Image 1: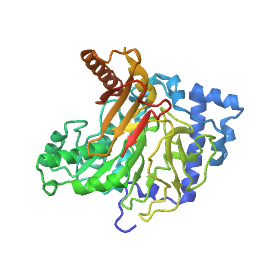
Image 2: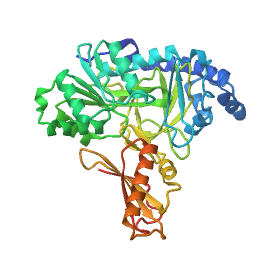
Image 3: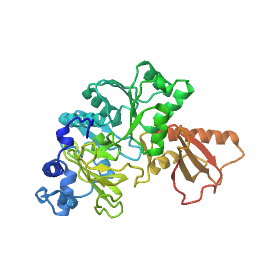
Image 4: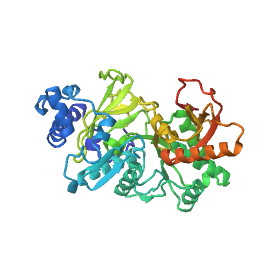
Length: 431
């Protein structure tokens, strides 16, 4: 614990028995809020024959219904809100490329809590008020940029909201403004590292010391590469837009798992197939219940992310449970630069394009520093292979449709009919 820094030590180092009591009190309050104010939960409770009064312990959480992402889409736009719209001061949402977007509302108190969680996250990584923080997470409807922006300001540090931008421009800002902390997706950090090298900038000339990265899975090998090329110490961060954005969990300087903000979230790990709750150390799907959200309370929300829990105290002094790093998802998606990509999105983009067959593969290539997204698509059996100009037009149309739908630059390769075996994995990751 020596040398450790805390944003809210009373909460972060609270004894386990007190954490569990606080969770129970907040769980009972949030269940009542959801039951009274959200028709979806009231109907589900009635279908199961339970009432909020049946929740007498955190173990009773297992009696409550699981909430799926599709439930949020059905509630579009305001059906899942638990407060009148006049009390909602911020709205974020997903892209909606697989149907209605998921819409998340925040009350003023929700934003205050979120800001505090980010300040807690930054402090755990060693960020102080003397730092200059450059954020290259996206702003707009995406939650991460805003979350880290306001958390950084609450900490008292200087924030540079570069957002998504040309990597060379990112390097120029780092150099000219003496950025000390960078925050964004890990693979964009690798792209920036490549730009540093291409521009002939010596990393020793930069003032960087800390990087906080999330929004997509990354492992120790990626950590090692980023640290060796940018000369920084890196930290994994985790969050879900549906339960409030980043700040849900984060690594401390021990980097021995991600501390979950258990005063704000009650976390379970369940078998993805059966929904059965698993024990400590068992790997399964993370399920979150928000404990303090006013505008958008969620009960037992299925994240689709695979992890395990460790409730042992950390050497840093924090007592909140830690989760292992997320490397897989249960719903078939891949994450590219913080953006979720589902097979249904690709299929929707390809629908109606002439001369294309039914088989395709999306390949995320991470074998080099600059990750590439490729889509291989079979031509239909009756497509005219000898008309080169027509094939080029089809390829350009397909590329544009995919980029418009996914929000990412895509490389398209048209292949001969029968080149992709039926039943092959639609989404693949290399490296």
